[in-house]
Length: 566
Image (tube, rainbow, N blue to C red; front, side, top):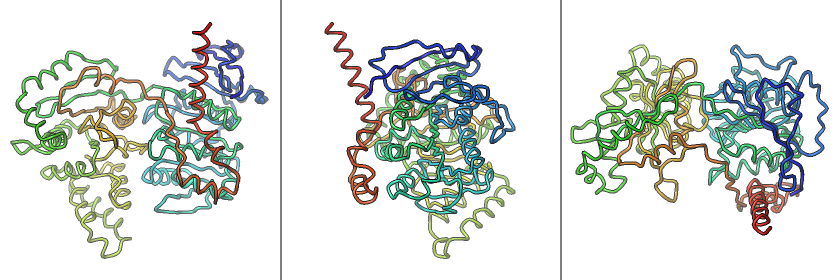
């Protein structure tokens, strides 16, 4: 890793651009390639940083584009908005107009999509192709529908569907992009921008390597937009991009949440909700202690649940009790009575999703007019299926649920049913949606209320509490910007929890993005047969984010050892 100088400066937005050029030199021999300049917007907490390679040409018109450390844009915008942009959106657009890559790290529903749309509008203006990638087919489908309404020439490429593959703007899953890079597709030569939505998915143990390989294989001339939930090491990621592609990469970070959230806890078998974190982010210890008391008063009931094992406990607690009414049923009914719909109920199991939805048989949330609209849309949607397929149980059982304003969404559903559920939820015809965690991954479908049926999930190794990053992602679906004054999160727990555990989950800092890179047989075979000799396995390993993080740790250990020795 080459030795370069790293500079850093933090400033409030009211300082002029001349002050921003001042720099404090920091341990040049330790630094990674790049320079960083920070500035904080005090109103909505927007922080800007930039990592740039040594010797980068700064010849831009400062009157139009500002400086590298203080980007502004005073020219004709490629796209205008009917609302006032937030500070992080304004800064991000200024970075795009400088024709430089940018990582935007912000909470769910903060408005990151506006930045992606601007990059697409720039590509149309500059007669370049643009690729929009997402981790999920459902998200790709939704983005295709949204972008088709905004732009004229949009295509879709997923494992299920291919529409207009020669379009100027292509929406695809990240696996499709990686396949195009392996093949050396001619399309890539015409691409000016690639937008990676939900880039924090890179830490996924199974699929994260797809994002890493795609970034490594992209030609250096292509500029990138990375959209991410909040993460603690965004600067490190930008330095990797700078080091890999020898181009500047800006970081625009905000922890501003447009719609504040209230977090409640519901004890299984209990009779009320306990506000544990208010809309100002204050932890209510008095309410938490009252919550713990409810468990202390029912030792025999809890012992009875635990005797059946963790899975049995969940079924008894949430599926039904002695009176025949499940806790989920009671919560959903209460939400509807208080006009807190629409609600998304998250479960970490497909079977649990379907079980909870079926337990709502006595509830009906739609008017006769809404039921007629749903049936009409449903019949139109399944008309493309064969007569035999229309009789499948998965199809027939869904209509009675949908007509009552209840739906299920998970990866085991037929693609047409998933798309239908998404459309009806967006139109407000589905009031209670039972979904798995994947629904929270980028689908822009917020609700007023979010319910967690459990605080534990099976991750392949152990049954653990959900992390703060996962909680932030899913709870971010609560609160619709411009519609709700605040969003509501309800957490169901069936055992006593330490105060520190619930605090870390609800108020914890976002987790860092840690590489899960591995060299698979699939990668090696593609490098040998399809990458036309452009890349080797050593090249991929050397340029991976995993290797970058490893080398950074080694440098830090070396310096620590040097300090101890002398």
